[in-house]
Structure formats: C-alpha cells, structure tokens
Image (tube, rainbow, N blue to C red; front, side, top):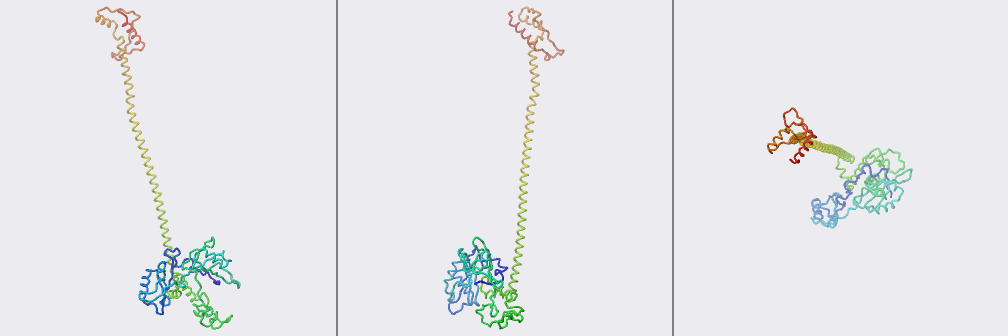
Length: 438
C-alpha cells in the first residue's frame, strides 16, 4: 500500500540521524527490551528494586523509560551479552516474577530516501535489490501524491529496517543515496476527525470534514470549523495548533525512539512547543559553529605565524651561513697576506746579499788578481828574490815585460782595477818563468 503525502516526510530537520542512533556502532548496536510482570501482580512501585535487579542480572545498562504509567519498563541495551542475560531474567530481587522480551515496536527503524532512478520501479524489485546488501531492509513503501485526479509516484521511498538503527547511506546499484529520518504524519481519524486512532477503530460518530458536525454531506455549505482547536479552519488543516503539537510529539518520538505516550509526556513537560525547543537548539548550534569558526580562524592565524617564524629561521640560517663564509674568506685573506709578508721578508735579505756577495766576489777576484798582478815593481821583486837565493836577477826582454798596471789615484789597495786580458797574460808569463830552468 502506498503512502500519500504532500510534503517530504523527512522534513526540514531530516538531514541528520536521530540522537539515539549510533551509525558507526562505536558503543554497540542499540536493542530495546520490554520488562513486564508475569502474572496479575504489578511491578514494584519502588524503582530502586527494578534497578538493582537489572544490575544484578546484567550489570549497568544504558538506560530505561517507563510505559503505561509505570506498569512496563523499556530497557536500552547495547551489549549483546547483556541482552542475552536479561532475556533469561525471571524474577526481581523482591521475588516478583517478570518477563523480559524484545520490544514489539521499538526494535525497528524507518528512513526516507529519494531517487529518481527508482521512480518507475516496483516496490518488490527495489526490496529484492536492497535485501542483497544485507543492511536489514525488510520493507519498502512508495510515497505517492494526487495529480489531476490520478495517483502518481514520487522519488521518495520509506525503508524499514529490522533494527533500531539505519545507515546514513544506502547503495542503489552503483549509486550512493543518503538517508534521513522518517517523520510520519499525525494519525488523524477521517471518521470523527480527532487524532490518535485510525478510521477503522473510530469509536465516535462520523463527522463532517468541513464543519465537524455530525453529518456526512459531500458539499457542506457551512463555515469551516475545527473540533480540535475550535478554529475557523477544517480539522485536517496543517495550520491547526493541535496538528503542530502532534507533529512535535512525533518528532520527539522518532528522534529519541520512545513510545508515543512517553513523547507526549515530554512535550507536555517542556515549556513551549517543539519548534521553540528546536529553535533554541538551532541557536545553540549556531553559537557553537561560530565558536568553531573562530577557532579555525585562530588555528589559521597560528599556522600563518608559525610559517612566518619558519621563514625567518631559514633566513637567519642563511645569514649565519653567509657570515661564516665571509669570515672564512677574510681569514684566508689574512693568512695569505701574512704568508706573502713572510716570504717577502725571507727573499729580501737574499736580494740585499746578492750585491754584497757580488762585491765580496769582486773584491776576492781583485785580491786574487792583485796577488798575481805586478803591483810591486819587478826590480824590487827581483832584488828580494836575489837576496833570498843569492843570485843575480835575470834581465827580461822588453817584449816579455808586462805592460804597466793602470792604477787609480786612490791609495786604497783594494780598489786596483785590472782587466781580464791583462790578468790572463800576466798569469801566463809568470807560469812560463817559473817553469823555465834557471
């Protein structure tokens, strides 16, 4: 059977998962159990007895809520081992016999998907394709609407899972389609036009859909009147305050996965409507987002500052390397200059000594030439030789006589200058005289 709806059942708040869900199963998959009394005896009115009994049987569980004015307990459990222990529980600590069983209504979940690729497919074929994924889909229902007096398909589909959590995405072949919560419309009886039961179970008289009076005329000419709020509108109007309150109850029920009476009790205890509570939550979320944005901006500024510090550190390292390079260059220049000065000092005495050596060499040559030169007249030399040998000095022919030595006017004996040719000729003549027999 198709569901008729003029609006998307996911609603404007349907872009998030309900609060009770744990899609990643970080804390275990949630399971709802129902604790009821076995016989006619009611459950103890002391909640501490039930709490200690459950803790003694399975330990600390996530939580629990009451149903039917405290005659039933709905237990929220995530640990599979605790679920098995609680299902075996038969008595409380005060010996009250109880039955723990899976909750008949809360262990299923519904979500909505929208896909134009499935708009012409049958619900059974879609179900077969989804069952192969083993995501726990047990039922698929198409949402339809009236157009020109005919019922046409919409791309929205309601998926029912055999667990209290549904995934955030569902694969349609190779396509990945997001899911959102399913908020059903309030249950309005189209017999008596009151909320809370279907027309098949209507206990009251049939009323007019226009004026709410006890007649069933197809064309009612009276003014529109709502029996639920006494407003000047039809009882099925979406602007009715009672309709809006019923929608608030349904949203609380779906978001927290609790029973309708419990959701109605919560809405009655809260000040203001569900819209007011949602608006406050939205305002808080806006504030949190603003704070997160500021934190992101601060993080970006810190990252920028750290980047600048890193750049400055690199610049400092480059400057240090350049300074070290310049210092090494200056040190090398200093060493080279000192080495050049030392070599200059070492080579300078040699250049200074070269003239001295030349002078000394020249003087020794002059002395040697002087010793062999006829600085003393031949006559004087001959007289000395005659005196030593006791013989008469032989006479020398004028050809063999050496030419007179040119002397300078200076009386310094070291400054006698003899040419090389004259010195050689004189040496040869002296050797010939010494080898000649006397």
